[in-house]
Amino acid sequence: MLIEILALLNKERTYLMNEMADILNTDTDTLKVQMEYLEKLGYVRKVRPNMGCKNKCMGCSISNNNISTVDMWELA
Image (cartoon, rainbow, N blue to C red; front, top):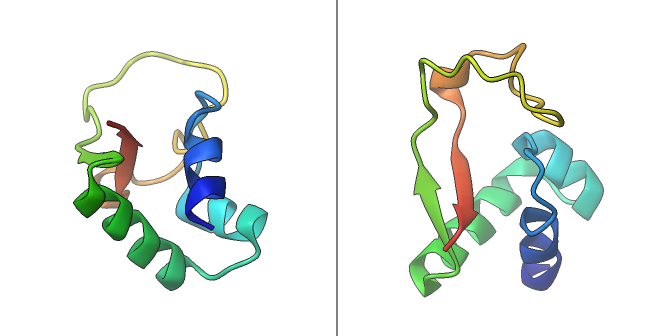
């Protein structure tokens, strides 16, 4: 599953945890543990969302959600 997570993150698209979990056929709790493991290994890093983001980038699925409660990771 770790390789599949990295492949999704490499697609330059934003995913919600539940979207990634559905794609990977797992649950969000398991996915979060895997993301934290990848972070410890140095493959990804947790980032804080830009609360003042005014960009309307394509593919961002968090625009209709409360961004302050969203965990976000990017490839390291």
